[in-house]
Length: 415
Ligand code: AMP
Ligand code: MG
Image (cartoon, rainbow, N blue to C red; front, side, top):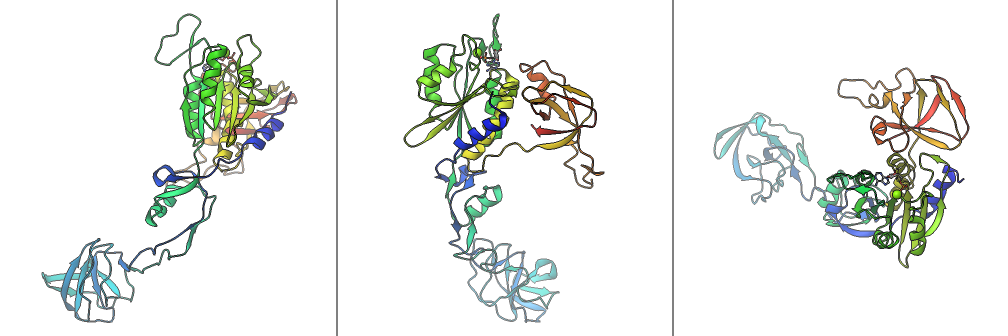
């Protein structure tokens, strides 16, 4: 059976970044920039005051001065400031001609509407002023392609007038649950039926991976219906089908995919849980779709998503094939591992919470060089999603059987 590492390599080979596209700035958050951005403006665009105060000539030592006018942000001063005069400015207002410093209101006392007394008469030139172009000059390179657009970058793009931006588009990921037994969360299962938990779970996982989820209706175990809904799912960049990929009589997914021209890359891997995983690619003239046939059992579906689909989605989004990083941990108990297939076992890692810390606290993680402790949780197999809810990690074990003692070093993946 195909090793997990080899399967990952095959997915990575096929997961290429989507073609860049221009999107409205409001849709660009957390996407990868696909162009170099150069500023067409100075920031700030004029000398501006950083304080509410009076614009003055810095060398002017007069205590009492005439107030020429009052300028709020958005207005423009009309009268030049000269020794013996001052202009009242609100934060953000442009500096009047002749002025080269701002004295804060707190350093002054009004005498009447037109006159003010200065307590500070020796401001340094430039005091409380942000000079034109101090932050950014026209023609200056602001961003290189490849960066992720955080809220900060979005703000700067708005400031320099990029209402649209060239990005790696957000991957669209369709979810297609399959099975005659499935009913929706708001329905009451009849005898032999269960609710569709994978659909909503995967939709949430897709959102967490930064992609856009498209939820398709549940496909019955019927060739025609399956073909129709798989066809709909092939409009997306990635199609996640769940269920119907094992060896049962009603596992019709691999056939349906073959009939629709989706080329199988692999089927079945040496992974527990997750052995039935199917992966293939549908090539169109101008695009390709990655198709994952996830095992139907919820824990298997989740593990296969985390291990394979999430890195693929990251690659499509231009972030690189981001395999889940392994965290070194110590087992809190003895564990008799039977080996056979690579295993990803639900586990609870003790230090996961304390690795972040609040104000006034010190970082306690690894304070004495210790690795986090991890407990492999009891679970009832791959249908037991409830056991997974207690987990904050998956312990990853290899194919060899091992007698692990408490304190043994093992690898875990945070989930
Ligand atoms: P299958 O691979 O289709 O044989 O499904 C394996 C097991 O997972 C069966 O017990 C299914 O009932 C269950 N299953 C399949 N799809 C879902 C789903 N969307 N939500 C919850 N359980 C599912
Ligand atoms: Mg099924």
